[in-house]
Image (cartoon, rainbow, N blue to C red; front, side):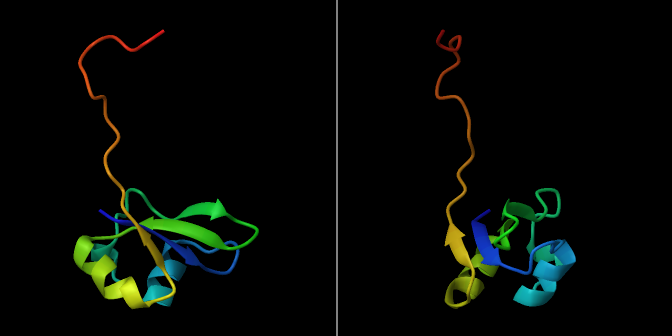
Length: 79
């Protein structure tokens, strides 16, 4: 799922982001939720589906790739 950042009023919650972006709960990762990246500036992160990200490409939201973070080997971690 792509990760996007969006400017919202400080103190916003997921419902505020959905309303501001015209999204439904089915178009976002509800388990990830709305993450305050810079709460004082009103900058938040939200994960959305690929089709939703494509649709939001011309909006005020900035879209980023969100690749999974995982180990590249099964060996013990380095010291």
